[in-house]
Image 1 (cartoon, rainbow, N blue to C red):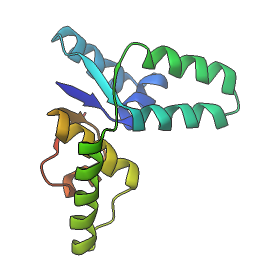
Image 2 (cartoon, rainbow, N blue to C red; image 1 turned 30 degrees about the vertical axis):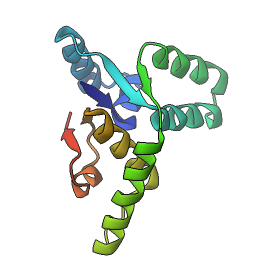
Image 3 (tube, rainbow, N blue to C red; image 1 turned 90 degrees about the vertical axis):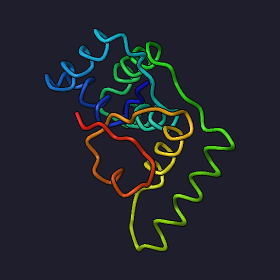
Length: 130
């Protein structure tokens, strides 16, 4: 089971050959493509504030309609708060959205597909770099 982070989906939308190839390889292997509600928000936010917002919102909604969206539930929120606490104690800085995405992935047993090295600072998250 894989969870696609925001970075690979943004690259996919932009037509990045590496992202397209990686996603196609996942599909050939029969992987169900999933992402989080946090990533959905990030993508939609970016589309809405873009110059071509109407067209970009349609593109993002089309992409999201083909992906299972994992919600932020109470157990994931609780884990996220623990992750935040551990990082803070170590003096590590990781964005709030990344912490939430990691917590959702961990709780669902998903492998997170990302190129964001900040995820390496978070215990128990399984990251596959694309």
